[in-house]
Image 1 (cartoon, rainbow, N blue to C red):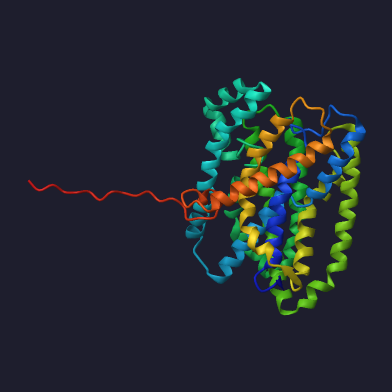
Image 2: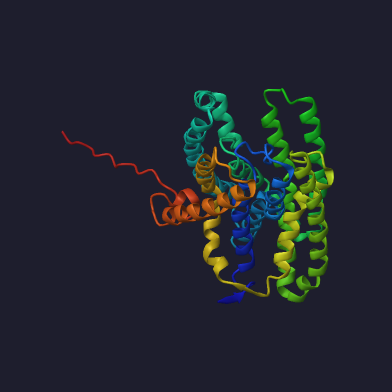
Length: 380
C-alpha cells in the first residue's frame, strides 16, 4: 500500500533504510583486510567494484544529515534549551555506543583468532590508549566512528539552525569539504607518525563535517518551503538528476582506477568530490519527490536501519571466516556476504527489538535506568 510521502515523511524513512542497507553492501565489497580484492585478477574485481559504486552513493554522511535534519525539525516543533538537548542526545547516542564498544572490543577476537592476529587484539584490550581510541574515535570497529562523529556534530546544532532560516548557507559544505581535503593531505604527509595524529584527524573531520550539518539545516529550510508549494521540489528534479548523473560518472572513473590498480583511489580528487557530494544530491532527490506516493513499507522497516548498521559486522566477520580458503570468486563472495549478512542481521535486529532488556542497544527501546534501593532505617 502506498501513501503520501509528505504526510509522514515516508521519503525520509526511505533514505534512512537506504543508508542502513548501503553500509552492508559497502562493507561486503572488500576483502577481509578491507582492500579491493588485490590478490585476484583485474577482471574479477569489476563486478564487486561496480556494486560498490552503486551502494556507496549512500554513505554514513547521509545518516549524519538525516539525524541532524530530524533533530532540527524536532527542535522547531518543541524548543528545548541547549543543555537539555545535548543531555538527551548524549543518552540516546553514547549509551548504546558504550555497549557496542565493549561488545566489539571482545568480539574482534573471533575473526582475529581465525586470521592469526589475536595477539595484537589482546594487546589492544590491555592498552589504556587503545581504549581511549575506542571510546573517543570509535576505532574498535570500522563502522563505529559514526556515533562519536554524530555527537560532535550535535554539539554544533545552533549553527545549523541558522541555515534553516537562510538555506543559501548550505553552499558552505563545499568550503568545508575543501578545507578537510587540504588539511587531511597536510596531516597525512607531515604528521602521520605523531601520537595524537588519529585524534587531530578526527577533530578535523568533525569540524569540517559541520558542512553536512549546515547542509541538513538548509535542506530543512527548503523542505518547509516545498511543503507549501509541492511543485517547487518537482521543478528542481531534472537539475538534481543531472547533478547525480555527473557525479556517478565520476564515481565510475574512480571505480575503473580501483579495478585497474587494485587500490582505493584516494589520490583522485574528482572522486573525492563525487563521493562526498552524492549523499546531498540523494537527499535532495528524495525530498523533491516527497509529495509522491511512497510504499509504507519504508516507514515500517526504517526504524531497524540503525540496528542493521550497528550489527552487520557481526555476521560479515563470520561469513569471511567461512569463505577463507575456498576458491570462490570475488563476485560470489560479495553477493554471499550481502545476502548472508543482511538476512542474519535482519533476524537478529528483529529479535533484539522484541527484547525489552536489549532494544535500547539499537535505538528501539527506553534506555536502562539504575534502580536505587530505598534505604531502610532501623529503629533501635
